[in-house]
Length: 273
Image 1 (spheres, rainbow, N blue to C red):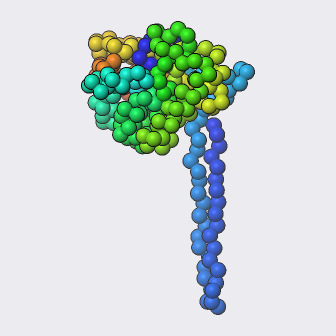
Image 2 (image 1 turned 180 degrees about the horizontal axis):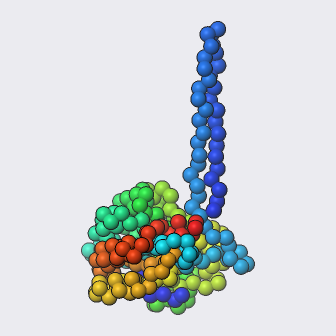
Image 3 (image 1 turned 60 degrees about the horizontal axis):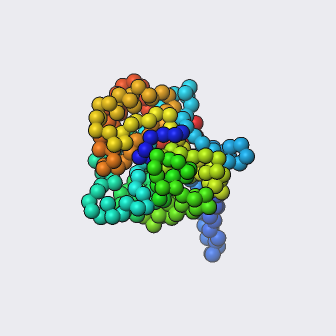
């Protein structure tokens, strides 16, 4: 989301009892039983009215002082030439800062970004500090008017999201979350209906950081600190060329929010609570 806004499955338990049979008159003790618990599926919201894709904006305001920092790793389907010419759509310094500060975060990644930076995508996807979610393959708009972005036709919306998941798998992301963020934050009923078969929860936000194209880190920091409430979802960006201040903002915001008693969580924890 480089432009500004417009807008639990139970775990399955498999039990296997392993026994040894006596091959001679000498008795043999049965092998100890082994119980394997499958990992829980990430929490999602129930479909909305008419079975439409549900939309999550923020978590509970009363269940503790939690906040989710989210980062859009944006790269459109048409920006390959710019990347080849040296433009940086990644931000390793930001990720290093989050790791140093031990901040859990959710990264909404486009499939094109994962193709351009497969090692970074794989590293994020395999680091328990982070969770990778879907930001479309192309970063094209899912509505007719969305801040000048090219638009995906209605019959291609589902395929665009599924293509992103395929790109994540090829990059080595083992378990991308069933969460989707609309490019530009733009959606309508048609878009929600098109994504219903994919089974995702659409994730928006309630705090716009303003880091997109910003050059004043202090102003962005103030905007985040003034906007955060318990259960907030903050939208920021993991793109050096289009959001050059974000690392500095994170390094300022995190200690201040911790001083105020906030705990950083991933989106999945907010949805699950």
